Image (tube, rainbow, N blue to C red; front, side, top):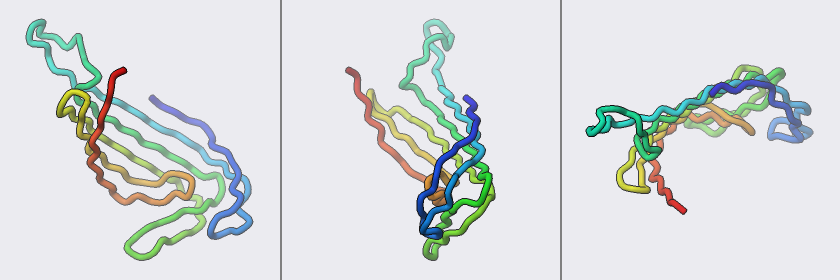
Length: 136
C-alpha cells in the first residue's frame, strides 16, 4: 500500500520555543507491505490455502518533508540534542512473525528513523516480541 499527502497541525510549545513554532505542515509519504510465506500443501502440491498464522514479513517506510523548520531530537551517548531543521525525516520498520505454537509467535523487529511528535531519532533499535493471539 502506498500513502501520500500533507500533514498539518499547530505546535503550541516545545523545548526550544516556549511559544511554539505555530503552523506545522509537511509532505508525507509511506510504503507499507505485508508478505506471507505459505507452505506447499503436500496433498494438492499447491499454495492455494494460506493461513494468517504462517510466517509474515511486515515492512514500513515513511517519509516526512517539513515545509519549514521544525524541532528535531537527536539522541547519542550524550544527552539529547534538540534543534530546528527543515531536513526530511525518514522511518523504517521491518518485522518477521514466526509462529511457535497455535496462538503464539515470536516477532523480531528492527526500527530506524524518527516519528512525530518530537522526531526522537531511533538509531538501530532491535526488539524481540512474544505475540499472543486469541479467537473469540
